[in-house]
Length: 412
Image 1: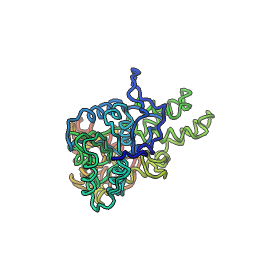
Image 2 (image 1 turned 90 degrees about the vertical axis):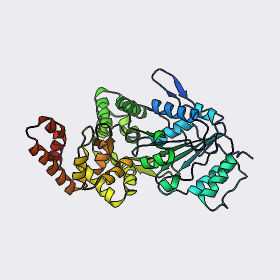
Image 3 (image 1 turned 180 degrees about the vertical axis):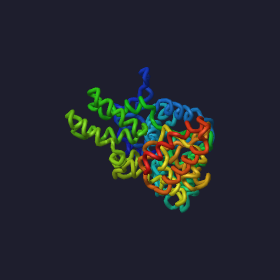
């Protein structure tokens, strides 16, 4: 076997990237001997994922010898699944354990799985060409044979559909696999239920720290700091939203001028303006910019028409921290529990298994609000009916009041 001398061709390491916990512990720096293929560079700033990062790394390096071992992360658009996978790939612990290298395949909405497998084979051995093999199955078997007992980490980023991942567990007995996806069903199919991690938005303090790293000038005075934190609150601590806010603020006159800073922060109070902010996606094969609005819409377009209609009907509900139960969701979306399950799997609505309640993330709510007048009418009718039939039961009224107030104040 001839190891591909260009296996590091995609590396563009920022040598200053160091992840550290509050206690000063350094979790990783990228060793100079890292063998990467297709692995994106670490972003300049990484914040708020220490626990997830360490847990996933420990799982990958401590898993028992098995050809079927895999883990998957899933979560809503913009929650930072790809960034977390990049950080895992750049971890010293991962690089030292998977001594033969880390292979990365970015899929996206319209992937070419056969080509991705062929690229992996060429990365491992520059003299190997498996393009004559017609099917994904043949190429998967060929790659497994090529890998043999070597230790690779195979990362599949941004998977959308079940049929795209069937043949991407191509590693041998000493390899591990990591998948990122927006869809919980895809994650379960790839890794099994017990090996799936749902990635959530930042904790508030981590989100504030992240924006401060991206646009420190905005935190130069008390008034701007307060406005900046309110902006972060308004996007529900979603990492991509915070990153887009930081990118916009750091490239505006707000960097230099207090008056411009106040005007810019005020402009970003408009949800529509925030949804239009755009940047190139980490790990994408193109430099085309994608907005927060685009990222959410991509998730919606992959749904059946009935589920899309149900999703837009969710815009009638008050966003987090308020919630609503299954009965309300069925009545307002005019759908069924199977359709709502599709929305949960697509991470377009959150489901609290313990309390059996739905929640709508603030950024999703900004995208979907006002898209269905009929749903808004059903929302008002449902909660008004609940109120009228439970006037003597203050416990019920207390639970539904936020939604009742929202419906009458926002949809007239």
